Length: 73
Image (tube, rainbow, N blue to C red; front, top):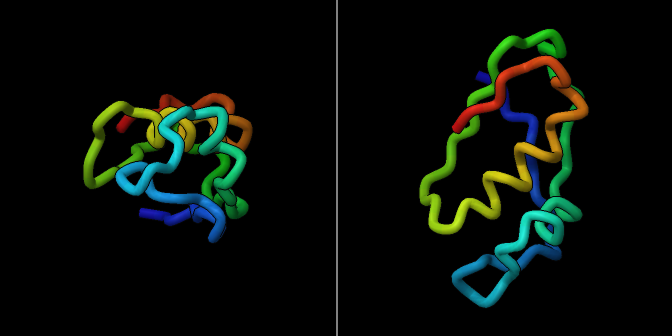
């Protein structure tokens, strides 16, 4: 288990009127250098998936760091 994602302070929560559009959310995602760049599977955990916007944004943000991994959530 490795936490490589963070959100900058400017992102508003969706339930408080923030965006659910992946392209807008992705701009606020910070990706730390992955400890396992050759991972075959990356599993994303989210406490609530409503529209999938945050999941899609996270998947898109980490894809360049894990180009050959199967990203699931």
